[in-house]
Image (tube, rainbow, N blue to C red; front, side, top):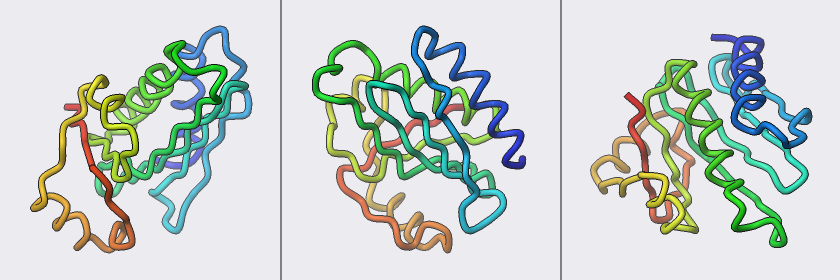
Length: 142
């Protein structure tokens, strides 16, 4: 999986799941490794930034921002749906919300708490060793 492939997957799912929203500013950046991508979806009402690691089959470091006047319109779940669809097509099996500041939102999206033993395993991973955790939750996609 390369940057161009991830970009095509992002555009396909963004156009389907974010129909009616201007999302032309969405983009993919390579991180410190050619198989790790930082994805940014920008809409007029906010943005969603997250990482996709195709080496470890894990997506992490997600940050959703929906502007105050636009909240409560279902935009957050639509952005999460794009992330999940991109991950499935890219072969990524798990999504980790490592810094969870809105537990009720993620519970509503069917994410479940991560155990301490799972956190310990993640911290041992060379690509994830600097990750911070707050109320972490995850979703297995397959």
